[in-house]
Image (cartoon, rainbow over all chains, first blue to last red; front, side, top):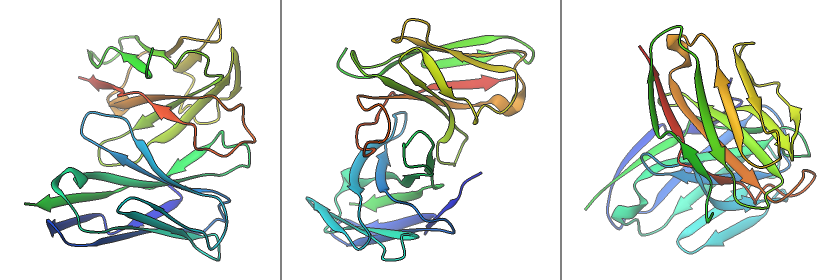
Length: 112
Length: 117
């Protein structure tokens, strides 16, 4: 089962608004990844975080690796319609990354 | 090819039927992963190959699930005697890394949506 808890489950926002979603775990992760999945497609990697406390940006996206290594957040600024999709956090349970665990996702809807 | 290719895109199977799902990874990618994604859920790990060796099959839900990658490139996920609970999207991912590396190299295919009726 899922060991990563994502919130909120879904969000409905207006174009131009900022978005924040997070992910928590009862286990420590050494890597946190954020993916986006469009309908009918596989997940695409957005941001990867490798150190506790790390803050990384990718365009309008910013993500942080929590100090406790048990949480991460993803912010999207000035949302646009193409931001619609499902956002997953993920992390490997083991160092060799073979067993990637995913959260259940946050479904984002952006109204023009 | 340029990306990970999966076929078929959609498969409808009658309960009890055997199915085979194919994954063509990116050329030269050493690692290959299969995931199962139920409706409204995130992907769940099934199995992992490094070249032709299946190094981890801990996520396979039952012995009806079998995966192979005989020549270290194309992989097939086979499900025997399909049940309704097998209905899901089956995602394949490949990676250049061999493990012990940062997990930024995953590339997912578009998946095969299996519906068991």
